[in-house]
Length: 451
Image (cartoon, rainbow, N blue to C red):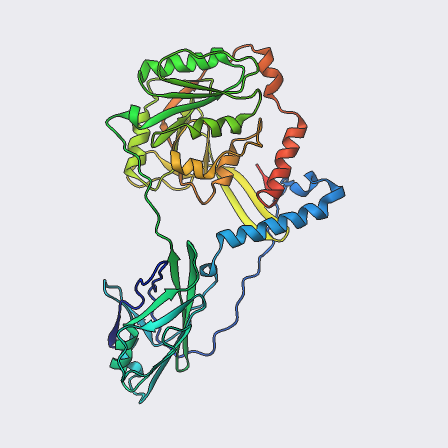
């Protein structure tokens, strides 16, 4: 069988604003039957033994109302996040052939050249199609419409016309797509067009040293001896680096020192509210998160974190170790059906990071990490989590944040001090935990979770 290729040059190129472009099709060589009608049906996920059934933390008197509101919120979430490009596309055999090159994306095999007449139909739903530089002799119907038909007597003429087909979106959207249905005789193919509003870059000037690259951030509550000791340890190694402290103590004190920004909050606003405040004031590309009872040592090499992040721009978070603790965890999530999803947290990492010794990909880490400021802000810290929260930041960032752990960079925990006032608030009441689990049921659409 002769399957020489004739090019469809620049098959779909950008035109208009917003614009779309065609993507390459896979190579097929066999004649097909009509495409099966396949629709994705959500599958219920199985809750492992000893997992928490989150529906138990919903008030039974208005359980149905909560479930209905959650379903409505999820439907609107899907509209925001999903597009036609998320549909499952089957790719049965066609006489379309694919070659990777700069100017040629799609070809029609000569295997169909025995035909005396060639008819091709292209159809879309959110835009219009046209053949550029259309000549009077060209047999094209539907110019500037959603359905475009081409009829010619030679394969060479067909490929020439297809090479001049363009797509223009007629529906304004900043992030969506369209599907092109391509019909040639008994053959069919579907391929996507991506529509994107161009984005404006947001760049950070790294400057000359770590002082212009990183801001140290922490949150304190009723632990001034600890936070002052933390500051002193930072200054032993980093004399000029900026330190931001979010403080929601009941009786507030000033933390003294140069280049320290201490933001006083209303009392007892909570852990994540303080994190949000501290990170909101960062002006550097990165921030280093530390607890107020940590202590810098000779192993606390912030420059090493920056070097790792700069060498791998895809990374959003890189963590180290605290004392002998090198804790990290993986989140295993299944979206499930209308009952909700299942989430399991297990200890461990994924694979080693190529080219970076003793560093591993993971999902979540402990409270000593360097993060890209813009990436962390996009995920945020839910202020409803006051005393029970840490993993929740990585839950909300699952699929958004690329996380790593490099335990060779580390610091220490301070020796625990007697602090009766702080201890009263340290352990949350059962009601706080129940509220958090209800939050996971509604906000994260989970039916069960296991830590």
